Image (cartoon, rainbow, N blue to C red; front, side):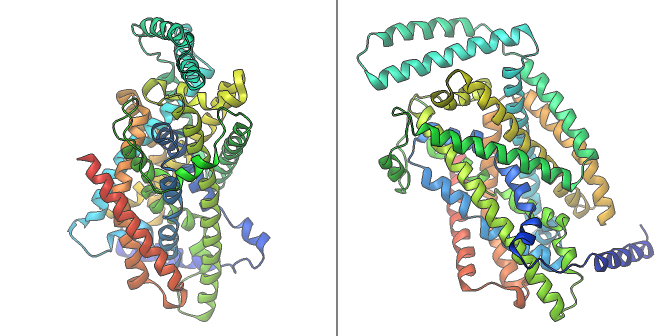
Length: 517
């Protein structure tokens, strides 16, 4: 594109931005109508991190790591808002902002190179998620007779293991334990020669193609509506399930168990399940709440929602400052409200994993991931548990898959411009975003078919995101002290929160890095 053409486009975008300038809402109801980016992020967050990683951490560690899960949700919000503040103040995309930071460069800032590596693992995580959707659909709607037989055999084995664990809890000396063990051995020998059903992979491919089409023709409002509806259904079912669990004496969460979960202690190694349950929790920390990918993704949705454009072109006037303060206030409410939603959902899933799966020594993994997770609902819903769980699992996992594909497509399209693969204009980014939306779900499905370990795919991405958190915490502080508008800064309490976030990120990121090596 010639310099003259770029200038014309810049002038056109500037005029369009002036035309879009709007005064911020002044009432609570009007403010609520302007929320959205946080709910989209919640649609991306409340999914693999909660349904798979958080639940697996509860299954492995029991109640003892509840404190880490809660901190993982709350500690990142200040960094999220600081990234959003920078985007609204300067109208600059977050990857562009990261690229402008001081530090070593090889065409782009070194942070973007690590982001590239992390994004490759995000695609792997998406593969694990679409695999989870495929498994859930393969159980609820098997496509082949063999798939139905495979499901039945797996369900019988998991139910037998659960029955035996319950018997041990009630009476460790019961003679029935040995009889159930014989049944388990018989089912295990029956399943071993069975090849894994292909139904989950077929369903994953179907879902990936449909998502590609929907994302290609969709727009922001469509994505926001789908994410909000699916997250609302998922959160409601999860919380109701946990509440109803309290009416079952065997499964109820006791006060002393909650106290242990908030005691800032680490669980001992459990040889029955894993050698180090803390490693799973650390990986979960990277993707529960606002993960590193979502911290970068959130400002893109704020820009697309229009917060920066509504503020208008930065002219240093008192009117601009007032509009900026108003729209930043809307953004803060959006971020904090979404945090409350996904924190409650995350706690509910962790407690379900600890209350049910940990007590019966079941660990969701590989092809049995969805079969195992469905056992969390058996104490409350009985024979209907699988239907209830599969409905919720499909809703939340697909919400994550759909929203994350849309958000990551926007980031990748922006990155391609920074790497010099296109001219970097907003129009070109929009074209690339639509194309990447088509490719992303398909690539995720291919990775799932090749790797075939959905839980491991999700946790690997969580570890990579944990390592990136300190980098983003430091970047947020740099934006605060070097690039913030003095008229839009928050007070000292906010600075303390940013420093605490960085300290937490360094501890978690360093711990995750050590656990890898």
